[in-house]
Length: 437
Image (cartoon, rainbow, N blue to C red; front, side):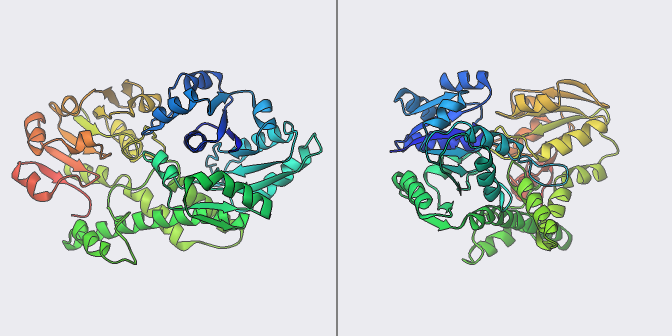
């Protein structure tokens, strides 16, 4: 088993570190935030992710997993150093690589023997070449440091499962020794390994994520046409799903994709193409469709209502998807902002995302409206004039149609996740609007 250091304890770094420890490696997770390190040592995860805390406590107790701000010792003793820090989107769509650069310099000034640096963060094609050169430029000791690419393909909400039971492990290396070390690290996982050159590995990550984003935007585009011609997008998706060339995943129409990957990665790949004098027209279209789709329900409701001013609006679901407390690019943000600007009195419910949402929308008067947070869907619905569903949490999916009729002052429901059938809502006496039906 290997001694591994992981730089960064967000979704990528923390999940990777915990899963490496679960497979028997000795892992030290490095973060600059001392309070965050104390929290993790106590067995509390800084992110909401199924099964993560349980594995954190188990492997910390077993002595296979530790957390520190002392990067010098962690990097000096490691056989492999995985970089899992953020690469946030910049205003022009490019990736901010400043955190990668900071870690690379820390590694260069800390390592005392030959080691492998593995970039798990999503980075533009060619970044690993630059990281290797950057480390070489700042090396203090006479050692050899190679850099490899090992992109992650986890989904928030299922990140632990997606790591331990991944469909494949992609590694990008420039030497047999680097490839061999990564194979040894991943051998306990018992998963298929796709070994390619570094630049191909970097591109695989973008190509895979952008293809899934394309599927989502395509289905949303078809859903909008279905509404105009009288077709049902769920029937259409069902018919498509039996085609093995298409598959059943990512065919659900809704109010667009969000999160930390798809929005950022589509824009980053578009930026990369433009840098090289090329236009990715399919990706451009996916981004445009998604931007429009996020607020399609607001536009429908605006056409139905004279005003939102003074209306009680129930908002069910704040995170961009179930199973996570992440709000990055969540459609709820755009819609809540528009509703508040129009004077709505919002009563919002989410089982795990409320605290994060409060950081952007504190409780109280905002713009022309008012923001309230409640602890149950029923409380949000009580006396409401209109309701929006933005996230398909089980707590929301399990609301009976009759509940809307009984609790709301006006049973007017805009469902961005097509939770209910048209017939059951009609039978319950609810004015129901969804996507593509």
